Image (tube, rainbow, N blue to C red):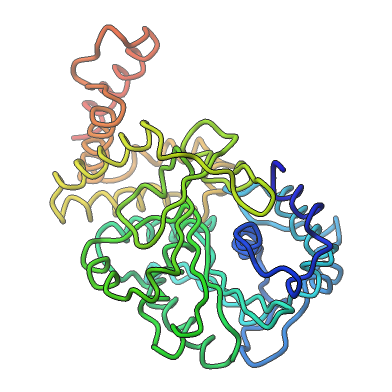
Length: 388
């Protein structure tokens, strides 16, 4: 067993009534949450919803109308995923309802969630992770500054609304920021909703600031239901501490950022392939990030987030796809942001070079190649000439 699609071929003929939800099913629902269902799936919590089979055949089985997800996602695999689930016995009758997708530039919020009703009378509440929008990434950065951010508040309200309108037992899960929202909303939900929760799954989701952790850890009932699945060279999942059990998993990808893609994760029948611990590089990144953030004042953190946001939204860009399809405009925008923003970004980038990569931009070592030295030298010259 090597990937999600192998699992669907092997397990796809067995119903949820015969074999309840496992961690691979949970990954699949967390990934299906990234597909845009706008004007297709209703936000109404009280209706029956639409089955995956009907959804695919009516709305996505048309090559003239391709699914557009954005630069961060392997679109071909996502299309294959919804097709495979719609056609297999296990998933085809799963029904989707309660779809919400909100982008709010003013309040810097990107939030999306939906309910998957399973044939065994359980419901999987899926929170979407960060999508292609730049404001979504801004909100992620904001998480490092304060809790709660707007999406976290929205997630609590959403989960309470789900609990209010169903008698089903609940699974709560998500990938990346969706994993963070799954944990946060579960611990802040009302008691009636909490009592319905069977499991909470976070797939490579970032952690939390200490204030929330201290309070949440008092709820042993929910702590025992949380599992964090973290790739062995995690970058996102190594940010801040979290709650509940941690399971380290193997990935076919080598770099930490590429391991964030669940389609690279190794699967062994109904479970993810286990790793013994985080890799040395992931631990180094985590420690370096903690040290860097500890050395920054709250004002410096806010300045950095604002600077990166200004850079990303320059030239009217709204998504990462906008940036990647016009890289020249993005590079030119780097030199148009104000002087304070340039200084903030450069200082932070130098800290990353020094702390995480072991590179001092002022004193490059003999271990660096000639090319590395030239790159750093050019970057230093640019910063001196442009950041004034």
